[in-house]
Amino acid sequence: MSDLSCGIIGLPNAGKSTLFNALTRAGAEVAPYPFCTIAPNIGVVPVKDRRVDRVAELAGVSKVVYHHVEYVDVAGLVEGASKGAGRGNQFLETIRNCHALVHAVRCFDDPNVAHVRGAVNPVEDARTVNVELILSDLQTCERAMERFGKRAPREPEARAAHALLERAHAHLNGERPVRTLESSGPEHALLDQFRFLTARRVLYAANIDEADLPDGNPARVGPLAAMAEAEGNATVPICAKIEDELGALSEEEQAAFLRDMGLSEPGLQRLVRATTRLLGLVTFITFNANEARAWTVPAGTRAQDAAGVIHSDFAKHFVRAEVTAFEDFKDGGEKLAREKGHLRIEGRDYAIRDGDVIYFRVGV
Image 1: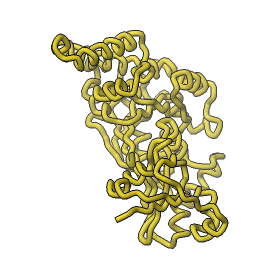
Image 2: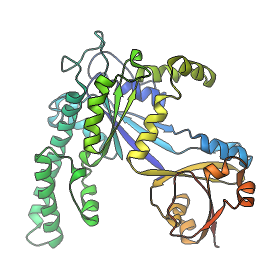
Image 3: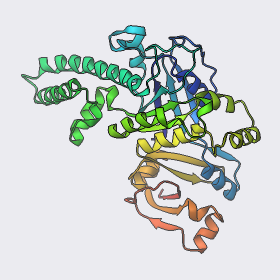
Image 4: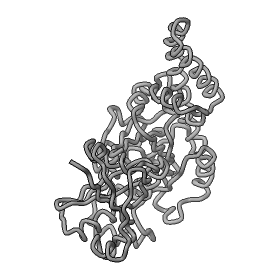
């Protein structure tokens, strides 16, 4: 998985488009009223990684290639979105192919920015959107059940699919997301074909006010974080407005601004890392005479399969992986790591670890 796609969802005026602009510098329209986003905004963001910069520096190459995340920003989802309210069905369909959802939740007060529910309540706001995702998945499930039900009397595979969908339907009816439905490997693969929205992991972006930095407004963010933890999801407090302003500054100006705000790094970096962790992904780094490059794969990926992410021939003709942990690589590069015995020879079944610097040896 070299690229990751995330759909940005939330109620109107939760700060979705501001967050999208901060991530992508795309200049999506932002306005203090609902549904200013009509067509979905899509932006591809390189995920800057200082480890890759350091590998490039030590390898003496100038070209750095980060892995990328695609963000899809759709209009705010309101109660009834699953039935088309606020063009909800159209927007929900746009994000079905995303790997994860970034759920922007408003945690700030601003009398100049309307709130569709009348008052800010992060947990209830999040639940409103989550219910619409479940209702949309129920519709998807019912359509699939009807389709497979017609074939079930004569096709064993269709009977098995219909039985699985019945379980999923009952699960959703209990207001439980598809991702928590117990299923075997083949069942999980079948469910994935239906692109259920609630099968996606969720990162709650708690959009706080500038005045709440650096502490993050625990009174409002805390209950949201507790809800996320109970779901097996995660929360990142972030001030989308400040992040958007940071993007217009030079690196030196950003550093000074962050120091003044009492922050060690931009919130966007925490958001991207949290998304990666939520999906169980790890990053490994390769380099050659021309470039240093980051690659992202699921944790536990075998070395041979990771080689195949670079090129299918690398997996086919895999010989070995020469692996150095970044912490052992960063002070002197490959030569010093080899001299100190930090460079390891690993076989095809080696499980890739986050931060591995790898040179793949392949046959002809």
